[in-house]
Length: 377
Length: 177
Ligand code: SF4
Ligand code: SF4
Image (cartoon, rainbow over all chains, first blue to last red):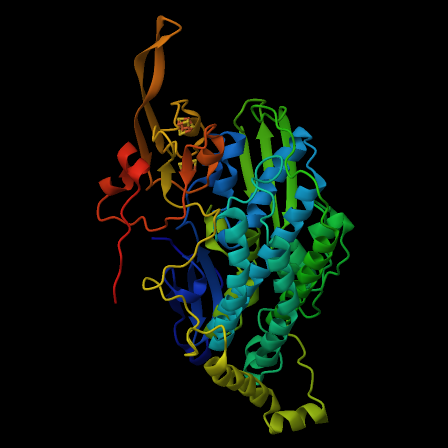
């Protein structure tokens, strides 16, 4: 069993001994199999430690024994909520290492579909986060909208969750016949739905008292830990890979990066809601400008990047997904390393939780939006 | 733990809180949904049911869906389309395909020649992740992932499909209520 090393000794209230409490790995609100060992003084958290690795499948090692074209479906299983974004980081890394020119239509379709995936991921986050805190209605509504996105994915990729969406050099298929109509319909309906979530949550006094001032992290601390994504932007740091190192067709898009001020759970909630609006804007523009043409580059018979190493990252729904690839010039990678956003975001848990109540730990795990498939790999 | 100063509510906000405007707004919206479900066109038979009525009603899956594998046959001659090229087995990241060829003697322009044809085809659906790489590799559109999605069996051996199962497909169970 994992030994918790808790060094801090602290005066406890009533001089009662501190209590060590196991939360997880089967706890429903740890979002997977995460074990959190809490050290408590009454109901206040004094210290905590995370125990991860229950879902380890050895993805990076598997990748060393597969051809370059075969690895993308495994990448879907890292962050299975955002399979489309994860697949994209792999194919873009290989393409850029080989210098493959990807046709513009493929870039635009990639932009649309990854943004749809961002909305789907944020919706699932909203659903489970609200459920953890006690607002059950939002779960049903958010999953209803997510279903529409998953239907688009099913028609486009042939699968709903682990889509295997991209191939090195482009896409497996062009957009299906009603693609424009379906996406347009979603884009038109979505703002009304977002307003509904805001009506139930944003001003609700229970929601406010459970989120405002909970899990605060300052901008400097967030940068020091290496947070990325909404968890970083909630603390007011303007960093988004889509803006700073544009990939796919993001350079042509006009969108804003929402920023929080206080770095608490409520700000991160606002940031994610606004991000969904911005994603909708990006999809709207990309659909307007969607060029015609092929969706696949001409591939050599065997995909073999030149020997060397390469790092590429994209902005996933949860933060910066990076992929570091070392090639020795053969048909299989020599070493692959993933930079999973959830793993690094989880490191902030201790700093955010200490001093709060046990019930707030649930809210803070929810606000970090972690996926254990990605943390354990 | 850095604390955030919680903004003091203004007078209007206090008034709104006192009359529970925030809660009433949310409750009103949910009530609208509850009553609206009774007349909603999307709901099943106006009963306010939105969920899929599986297994009574099977969902329509998309034409591109990656489901149960199938080996296609020539629609006219009913010969298999498979040319035993082994490309699908090479493309598969999970090694779940085994193509077992055999040699047959054929006469080409009066001379006897050996030709490789398919003898047995093993597809392990329990290891398959339905990525469709095999389907894309097949040069004759023989191997195809179909819309059939009910793959559960009672034994591990039941997941391993042989050529006959792949060509005929499995019988679809009809559920009755
Ligand atoms: S779908 Fe993918 S995993 Fe399954 S047999 Fe085909 S290539 Fe292999
Ligand atoms: S790729 Fe197609 S033709 Fe070749 S062995 Fe597989 S199923 Fe048969």
